[in-house]
Length: 274
Ligand SMILES: [Zn+2]
Image (cartoon, rainbow, N blue to C red; front, side, top):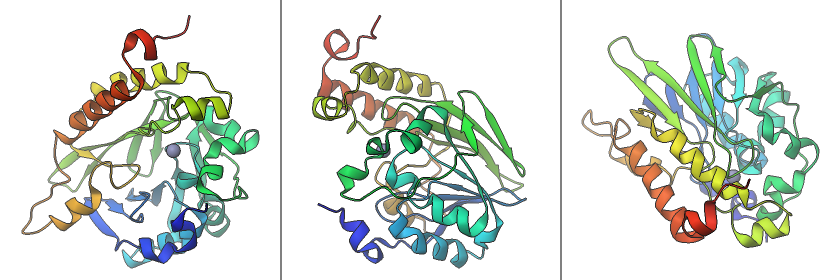
């Protein structure tokens, strides 16, 4: 069955807003997209679905920006809900694309792994990956340095991003986990696409890898991961609930506990293969 957002995208509209400094939310109520004003052009983090591109472009404009100033589009991972809009936006703006190198094969060889079958849609929106990202790479775009951390599990090439934003007075470390979902780790999914259970141990290792990070503003690949919309509502009287050092470690602990509860302990679920 086709995912409802691909049929009634207008029902998922979210008024765009500034999270802090040059960081903005331009996603919908199902999938996050974030806009970073680098001071020398714009960076977009994920493009959601092809069907929601018009909402995304309108959100960018409503914030006073011009989509033509998009320089780069970064992707958390190679799933349809994060890159579906990319082809259209590249056609329109000429922005360069970046995604984890280990997810490039989804675009070129295994489109069925893009989760588009699960969304009940055909995959027609492949794009050319201009900048395949590797672990530890730093992308400098305008005045922003974006550190890329390979965090496989949800997909082979899931990429987490870390960068600093500042407004002259305050500076914040921003972080996003590029692939926290365990829906690609179930026995059923692994069997359907002939994938290895090793992805589960990779997933757990990725969580461990991210625990060392200090993050002031945790942003989600989906708005429910960090309660984007709830926090937006609580942005009153100068309060900014997005600035919360505890949100990142709390999220990682939740992921860890959920995966262990779902797939078992290290002894039977996550032992790395030899
Ligand atoms: Zn995904």
